[in-house]
Image (cartoon, helix red, strand yellow):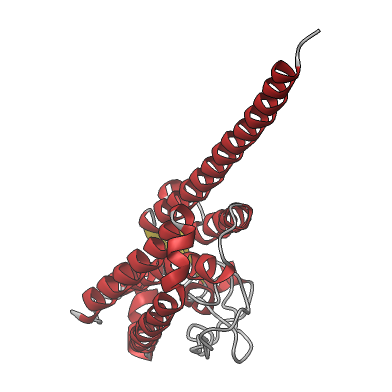
Length: 252
C-alpha cells in the first residue's frame, strides 16, 4: 500500500492538475468567444464597406416621432451589395449574431452598443454618400467631412470593444471616460448626418435623384401606391436620445 507521503503527493498533484486543466480550458474558451466576436464584427465591417449602389425598394415608410428611421426606408430605396443582395437585411442578421457573441464573451452592454452603433452609423453615412453621388454631388466637400467623422467614431468604438475583450480589468479603469468621449463624438456625427439628410431631401435634389434612379416613373407600380408628389420625400429626421438603451445600437 502507498505511504502517507505518496497519497498526499497523489492527491495534491491531482487537485493541481485538475485546476490547471480547468483554467487552461476556460482560457481557451474565452479566446474562442473573443475571436468569435471579432469575426462577427469583421463581417459587419465588410457589409458596410461592400455597399455598391441604391435602387427602388419598398414603399416609403414613416417612423413614429422619436424613432430611428433610415434614409433608405424614408425614400423607398434599398442599398445593395454585389449581386443585388439587400445590404440592410444582411446587416440586420450580422448585428443579431454579433450581439449574441458579444454577450456570451462577457462584453459590457454599453460597449457592445457603441461598437454596433458605430458600424450602423458608418453604413448610413455610406448610403448618404451614394445617394449624394446619384443626385449629382449636392453635398460638396461636406460629404468627405461626414465620412471622416464616421470612420473616426467607428475606429474609437471598435477600439474600446477590443480593449474590453482582451484587457477587461484594465479597460474598466477608463471605461466611463471613454464612454463620455464616444457620446460626444456620436452627437457631433449625428448632427453631420442630419445636415446631410436635410440637404438631400430638398425637393429639387429628390426630383433629380428619382429622375436618375427611375427615369420611366415606374416606382409607383413597384410601391403599389398611387402617384403622389409628396410621397417621394416622406423622410423626417428622428429625435435621438443619446445614452438610452432603446435598441442594441442605441448608443450608436
